[in-house]
Amino acid sequence: MRARSFSHVGLTVSDFNTAVRFYADHFGCPLVGVADTPPDRVRTFFGVDHPAPSCKIGWIRVPGGGVLEIFAFEPKLPPERIPWPRVGLTHFSFNVRNLQKWHDRLQAAGVEIVTRPEKSPRGHSFFFIRDFDGNLIELMDLGVMYHVLNWLGPLGGWLFRRGMYRQYYETPPSR
Image (cartoon, rainbow, N blue to C red):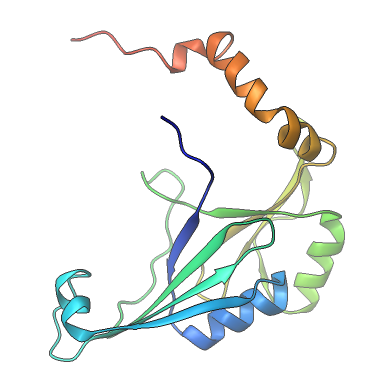
């Protein structure tokens, strides 16, 4: 069995409306659904210990098929910056074209730019920003590799699993 596709990333946000506007205004990602979670479910499922907790959940559609699922809790905990070496999620990424233009536009809009655009040894270009809550977002221009990965990605994965990346699929020896 295998996954059919990537589905979504979940983000807890400090302000629901600000999140909706940020992702719509800067990336063209519209809000496509909203739900208010009953307090009992917020307490039991999400583990929020409060007499009257709330959680608004929104689904923001990313062009190409992914979704950002946003959660706005009350009460909420303050954000924490996630250091790279910590095990767990560190960032998510948007595929874009014309990276320098994206950099210039986001910088002019006052978005926090973390790194300048740079080219990787494998040919793609990227830079990092932070959203209004400090979440790290990578913008990546794959260039021609976007089309190669789109059309030949499944074949490449099959070949690499049996060839040069075989060692990563093998079970480590018991100690």
